[in-house]
Length: 341
Image (cartoon, rainbow, N blue to C red):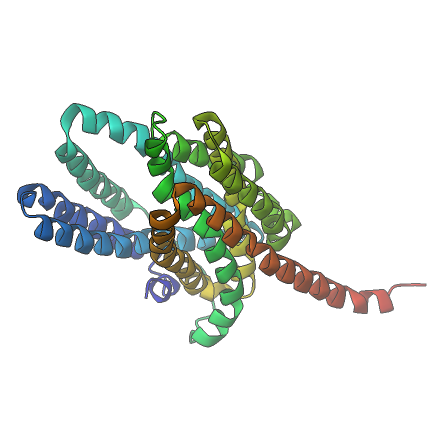
């Protein structure tokens, strides 16, 4: 739905709706405090609020990327995807230590209040921003054709995102289980490495091809996840998390370049909506599955499994890189025939 909305010149509307949507669901989540003595009701509110929050995040992330893609040509798609993601991961990396300090000083109510007000501030800024206007041929969206171009990079991104899910959901639990302090260091190390890599190397997918860069960086990500599973100290685990963040930094935008590159300009928003949905599916299915494995075999096994799942992305990246190479050869072959002797 968000993809179709972004296609119809409503990218700012998508982000504005997401910001308001997110602020409203934060109010719902904060209501948990009022019914804390009722476990069933509290958990029900948390589940409903988190589901609504997921929808809001889809509007914000997809709308933001589609907005950026509308402002540049196809040769800069990788940088747009990388830099929008960098802003998100910067917030995630900062929120761990800051949220801990805020909770220690003022409690959960302060976190609920702050996370309700911040989206409203963003909403106010978005209402003042101009909506990008692009001169596109308005054709009927062929969902089947766009999905056909996006599904393979999307599956690759989903597999790689299982590794990201493992760090997001289980790194603090691993630190707590091993009595490593502070517990947020693993994810912050992952986020900091990801941000640095995207700032310095965000242009690589556009220059050398998204599939080639994704293939190289997914190997780094898999190695980092494996190192977390083998770690017997917080230093080694944090280094593995940073290595995994470095690897994941260009896997998602690299495969994203392949996804939007196979679609027409007016369908980039729809393509990004479908592509982002694969990440959402990975998080929705991957986290519970990894939780089931952790319950039966321990937290370290989570990172071994996620390393193996992430490594499967190499097969998809290899296939996409090979197809891109064949396409380049096919495009260049007539020029070779017509070259002056």
